[in-house]
Amino acid sequence: MADYIANTSPLCYLHRAGILHVLPAILGRVIVPGQVVAELSAGRARGYDLPDPLVLPWADVRTVAPLSPQLEPFGFLGAGERAALTLALALPGSVAIIDELPARRVAARLGVNVTGTLNVILVAKQLGHVQAVRPILDRLQELRFRVSAALREHILTLAGEA
Image (cartoon, rainbow, N blue to C red; front, side, top):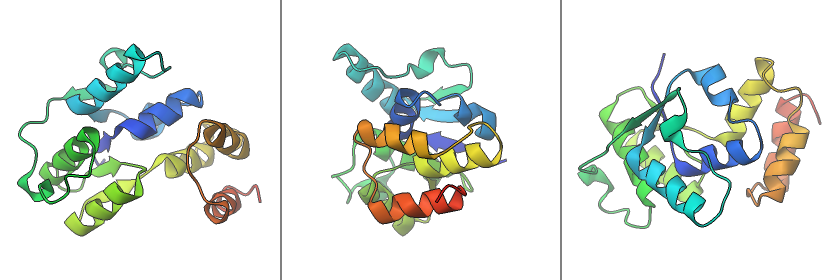
């Protein structure tokens, strides 16, 4: 089984949508870089409802230092994204769980396998861990998760809910 490395936003959105439990159900242990833990901690300190990977039994928290020199040209990436991509580069065949398009583009340039929140939700439905995708997409959009109308319809079609 591949190693899965979570960036901040998938953990945030899955938690706030009430379905964070699907990650270990479909992926097993998930690697969470220390920088992602710090970003989530900072958000909780500001009053946001965010998970704490330090107390999740399935989260394998890892310190990431130094960051990969391959990421130096991409200073626009956040600390969590850089750490997740550094780990993915160090673990051949791993998959980074990242939603943000700029980070996904960098991952593609570096040959890093990527998945995201929407694919996690689709797989969760296919495996019977969630009943329907539509209400989860509705909740994500209430939380300001960005998804185009075309992508939303595509996801609903794949889920058999078009």
